[in-house]
Image 1 (cartoon, rainbow, N blue to C red):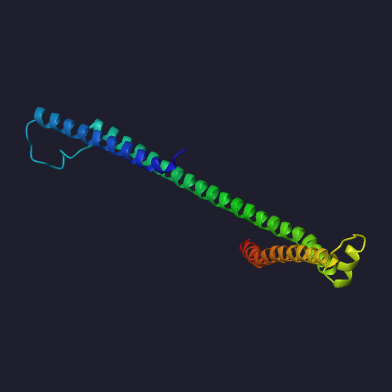
Image 2: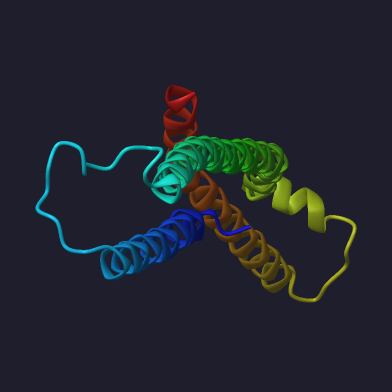
Length: 187
């Protein structure tokens, strides 16, 4: 429901009613002045409720309409407060989801970090000369130095890849922690 149109509708309704009231009053005054001879205004000729029952009815209608306008204004104010409360609630829910998403992302980074670090430690251990020789000891080759060099290159490439991935994760982690801190402070 579009609440922003309610004041305009109420205003148009009141305005159209006021115009019709003015038209009725002016037509009733024209009829009364046309049917009665022109008399100078006197204390006795001022509008009294018994002289002009239509005017009294119109005053009552105007009072009722003013009361209705006031009631509708209060209703509009209440609806605007409700809409504002709903908007604030939606913003809080979005912030909550964002905080949960940040926490989840931090957990994912932590879960990836541990296995990557363990594998990097393993690769670095395998790169030691004695471990390279031990890894190739069961393989017979005419050129063992070529096999050793090939294994070393593979391990170095894997080590570089793991280091790169850990750097990416380490780079994201402080920013995510900062965002989490901001989120916690805003609660």
